[in-house]
Length: 96
Image 1: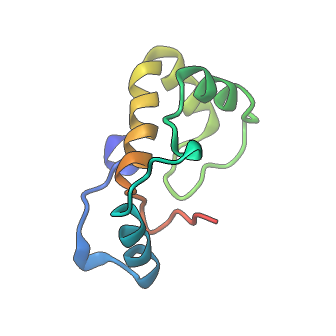
Image 2: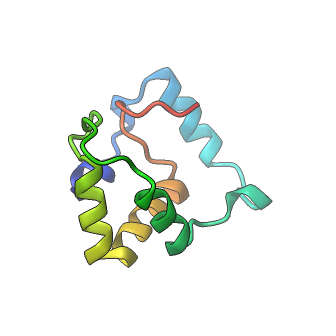
């Protein structure tokens, strides 16, 4: 799961989109909308996910996310915050 959520960061694999994201992450992020996710925020989102929906490109279903969060909420919250902090997103994710 960690390999999918936090893949190895390789600059050589960057698309133009990823190069732009990488450039944006080098700027200071001290704005009011760049606060870390709280465990409660992650819980609320995950609890609101519909069960039995097809997984995304990462292969992780909503049911799996719910089970993982129930068992290791601090780690899952850390993973999401690390993605936010590092600006590391897989090629398969589209950020709009």
